[in-house]
Amino acid sequence: MSDTNQAWFERALEVIAGGVDSPVRSFRSVGGTPYTVRSGKGAYVTDVEGTSYIDYVQSYGASLLGHAHPDVVHTLRGALELGTTFGAPTPGEVLLCEAMVARVAGLERVRLVSSGTEAVMSAVRLARGYTKRDKIVKFDGCYHGHSDALLVAGGSGVAQLGLPGSAGVTAGAVLDTIVAPYNEVPSLDDTVAAVLVEPVAANMNLVAPLEGYLAALRAECDRVGALLIFDEVITGFRLATGGAEEYYAVTPDLWCFGKVIGGGLPVGAFGGSKKILSSLAPEGPVYQAGTLSGNPLATAAGLCVLELVRPRDLDSLSASVASFAGQLRDAICSSGLFALTPCVGPLMGLYLAREECSVPRNFEEAKVLCENGLYRTFFHSMLERGVALAPGAYEIVFTSLAHSEDDLATTVACALESASFALEAASR
Image (tube, rainbow, N blue to C red; front, side):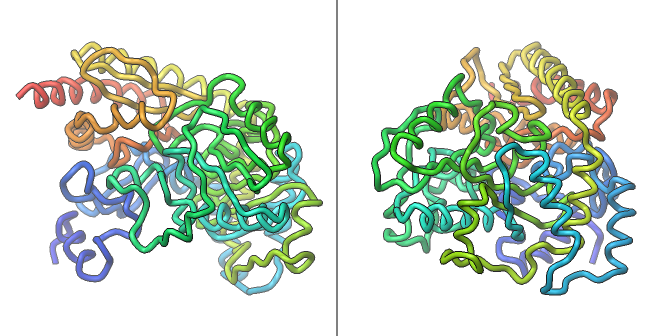
């Protein structure tokens, strides 16, 4: 077979459902053939055809240090020689959990799992078991993984594919899931076990919490005895070394983590106070298990990343992203299109519009911009110029510590050309 993106995708279609192992990797919402990555280094990925791209996907936020950081690679080589999985306790899982607990105020106990989906699913079960209540409140456009009860009104790939939820999810599975608009505080009662929220909504493009919103959720949960769960799969250890709890000074009852804590390997975690976590088996009645949980390669890589990234690194990244966002917005606007590039710390969104508009405050407002048809042409034009954004308007832009000022400047220049091209295409 020829070593092309098209050939590899056609081969994948024969043996992988839809040709991809996650719908967000497909080009369904932007059209065309996905590029197949051969390797990554720092801020760049290289496809099977030998084309390199400045990468703003960064495994959807997992690669905070960029791809194949030498210290992480060295750590993994050493861990690999000791064995890959044992189904037994290892020092690495203790060390990683100690590092997490040391960084996040209020986090006293952690349970490691293998994905963000598994972390949130387990946290919800724990909340129900601990409170002895059934109902969960989530927010429209927030994505919390693909467990049945949480797919309703989800963001990310669910929104990009235009799905209200998923076939195969029964009415009974979502019967106890209540959906509310993001940035509005729902009125709870004593049937609600927990409120589940992304502290910064990053799966409907970027929607920041309004001032006081998270604190108001905390107060409403306290009023009725419900638990507040922060889904920090994206914000954890990226927004700040202590995550959203440190950034917003609001402490949840349960946290869910992923991405950064695996250093690029599959991992997830959930945690909270000693009191709540004591409800988990083998101590308590809430069952949760996983053969590969606490995988020694993932814990080694994750600990390496946490130890390498200092508060000043995240401060520097936040400042760099803020500057980049402003330059990117100005470049696109100078083409005749309008752009919004909202930032929260090092997290950055990108909305395109035909005319000036306000930053979205919820999913309904974000959807108007994400579905206006401009992103598709812009995305492909950027890709042709060597800049890889996520293949969907509902995802955010992930800038890593490996992105240089030259990389960002090149991206801005490409955006100016791509925005002009997108405007011309939209005018036809």
